Length: 226
Image (cartoon, rainbow, N blue to C red):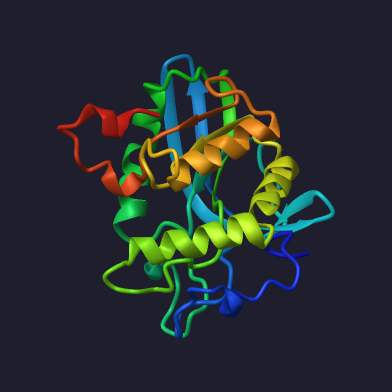
């Protein structure tokens, strides 16, 4: 079993890698349970449970059994807060991003144009690229992050890895929250293009929205659209 389907990938060989950036991928994680009953959505946060993949299948490291239906939330790549001082993974969505996501996810999703069928869903979060493409720089260098992200996604099998992970967990719904806005060259647009190419239908199988780090701008309703 492995964190992803990328074999023998070496983060240090990425052209714009910076020394001391984390080199290990952060696994996708189960983070809670979403109960959908018509317009009522209740998100119950649960202990994290990391996912491992093998032969187009997946398992939870705890070996626990969860509900059959999954929702997959996609971010772009791990941030510096998600690694310890030695560069080893801690968990996804630490810091302000996680706080805003967990506080607002159910409310914002209840307003989505994508209609969810009643039921109970596992909420699984992951990054399109599981490696720290920002190299942990503070302040973040967005150009560097995007260069590294695109190189991994387009040249080192990152897009195929995302497809393989999605096809393994078979989400009922996928939510693209990558950074990038509506820029056709932005990371969010690139991931949405991939979802289209994977055969997912926007509005039926997936939707997209702003990165959770922007959800605090509540005066701008567009930040809450999923």
